[in-house]
Amino acid sequence: MSHAIIETIKSELVAANPDTLAYLLEVLRQSKQREVLPSKAENPLLPSFQKKATPLQPSQFKGENLTYEEIEKLSIKERGAMQRRLKELNREWLQERFASLNAFWLMIVDGQIVASGTTKKDYPKPTRIMEVCRQTGKYPFIFINDKALAIEESSSAWNRIDANDFYPTIPLSLNSDFGSATLIADFDTGAASSFVSYDFLLAHKVVQRDAREYVENSVHLSQTYEFISKTITVKMTTISGKEVVLETDVYCVENWTRSPFVKINSQRLALIGRDLLLELKLCTLLNFDRRQTEIMLSPPKRGRKKRIQKSV
Image 1: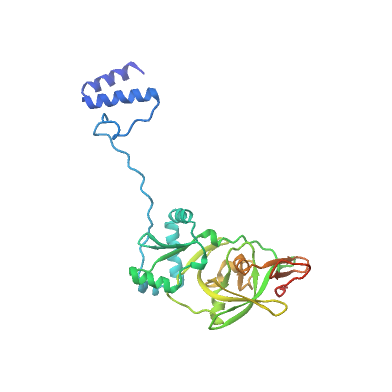
Image 2: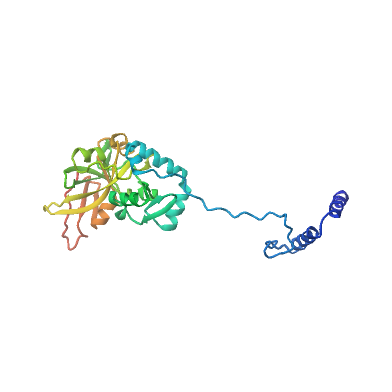
């Protein structure tokens, strides 16, 4: 240390009060021992002018809930845009809560998580949403974990994409008390969930619009899309004529023809993921030689197979 600095320190210490001198002495001693300076509560020698460190405040959810009447006036596109803004504003907050709760979905009112679930089976239905509205006077925010919507899709398979490329397919029917529709759906094991054209289901009266339902959105192939979860009955028919039936939730994608789901196959009406086959406990054989999907009700035993209707 230079002579000039030492003289400056001496001149400053002349005017220092006893508490300050004691504090400086303690600092010097602690630095020699390479120890952390004790907190003010532990060390009465700390002067009153020393600022106490402010602990980091936990992040808070940003966004004010609307009433159901306000939500009802918004279009699906507007509700989807609102949801995207909320996701961006609260991305880190949501990721932390999804991870800590191991949650598939979260319901939020006034910045607080009022309900959550670990699977899409307990995703809030309109009656549950309206119950929260009556209790709180506000329409809740609902968020689905983006990891559950991931689609590891590439252009490979059964529906002809180009001269040398085909996309695997599965024949099925989608039904409700109001109507039914039969279609050939693209099958993707890289998708955790199943997605269907909302307009197609509306046209066949399989589903009906309901303003109480929550509009979610996500991103696929770098493009955003809006969707609504609907409960429908899915039927697959075996070659012997036996039906395999499952009541489940599928994601109905708004404005399907302009969504990312038709980028690879412009004729696609639905993308079936792993969820349906997992719930039905089915086995799938992708025959790349014949370009056929064969779904078995159980693993082959003694050469006997029960197969779902082939899709070419």
